[in-house]
Amino acid sequence: MGITGAVHTSYTVKDMARSLAFYRDVFGFEVVKERPEVTAEYFRAIVGIPDCVVHAVLMKIPGTTHFLELFEYRHPRGVPQYLAPNNPGSSHIAYQVDDLNAFYALLREKGVDSYVSPPIYLDKGPNTGGWALYVRDPDGIHIELFEPPT
Image (cartoon, rainbow, N blue to C red; front, side, top):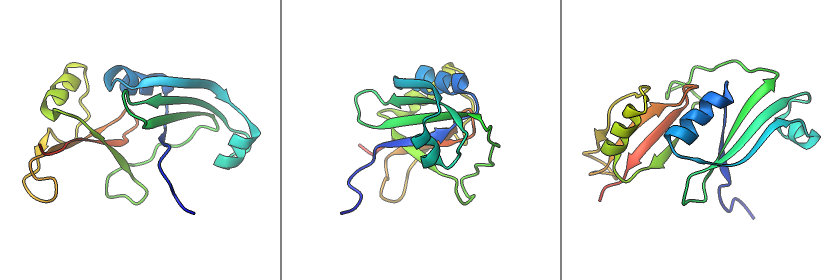
């Protein structure tokens, strides 16, 4: 009895179209299912907001079993948070890439400019020889891009 796996990562976003443009069009995630207006009682009970209306999109990283779920609360609207990495409650996910420097250049060509830093070479610790960076999505959510050591 206990946790046996991970199903998905979920983020609440302000503007679904803007987030889809980032995750689908720039990062290359595939839309698996879109529900423009979730109002089911079970959903409202799970999230603890009895009158919520949510636009939900389930996405997948191609070739993997990891899902990303995006929620835009149409009612009630939420309040943006200050998501600095050191603030309690802040989180990030790390996505593995095969060539971080090339992917960084591609993302910059596509107009992504919300980096905490350019790719950083990892010269100490368990990932010595790898590369990593943080980038922020349109809502300021930190995403780590990580190239493991060869």
